[in-house]
Image (cartoon, rainbow, N blue to C red; front, side, top):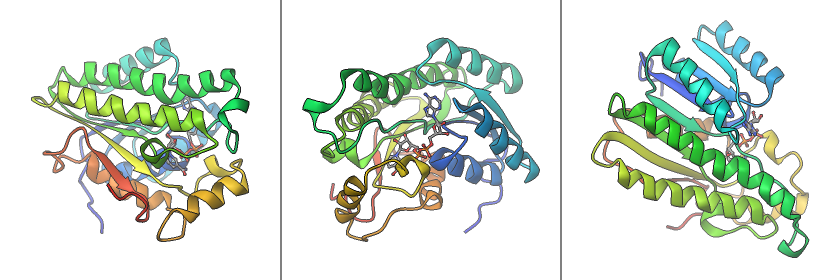
Length: 253
Ligand SMILES: NC(=O)c1ccc[n+]([C@@H]2O[C@H](COP(=O)([O-])OP(=O)(O)OC[C@H]3O[C@@H](n4cnc5c(N)ncnc54)[C@H](O)[C@@H]3O)[C@@H](O)[C@H]2O)c1
């Protein structure tokens, strides 16, 4: 189904927008009229993705931002403010998986710090500064991508699992702080989705994760984009602090 103008006049920032799920969500919002600012650490890929979108007629700009870096986030959001004057939608899709198929006793502490800095501290920073900006209009939609790993716990990937669970707590607490405003804060917990994030995931880890999905397949980027677009749309107005499911039947709560 096409909603041609659903995001007309909306200013949307998508982190991790250069590829994978972030790019898929950005494309969907852009095709439905949103003006896009893509925040990504991968300069080259970002330039390619922005050019691809502009060629389609989508208004998109790229910002090289590492979401674990507070100064970079603040500076990029200031540029967004200067360019468009407000922030309607923020989707935080940037994330890293870190070591997989590695029990905690062998999990390097430095690797845990790295995964934490991007997945949880990054989500905190993006949430903090987006909500500050949205507060100026009193309206907005914030969507943070968590994971089934954060809901259920995947063995062998403690950095990822712990930080994605942290994102769920972040959403649930902060959403209540803003519940009386026009700003909603929600999450999405995908099971395994076919993106390059999984290129280096061990076959054993992937087999374990697909084995837990009743539909017995990977999800697609387009499926994640479709539900995400609904979550950040104006009509999704009576849900906040909720973790939406896209798991092929894996989640039972
Ligand atoms: N693919 C899956 O199976 C799956 C499942 C559940 C949740 N998720 C979550 O969905 C989100 C997107 O995953 P994906 O599969 O599209 O990954 P991906 O690796 O395909 O894309 C991630 C994007 O984020 C960018 N990025 C990474 N670190 C960054 C940083 N510090 N600052 C800014 N940008 C950064 C990358 O350059 C890339 O463009 C992640 O949060 C991930 O944890 C993915």
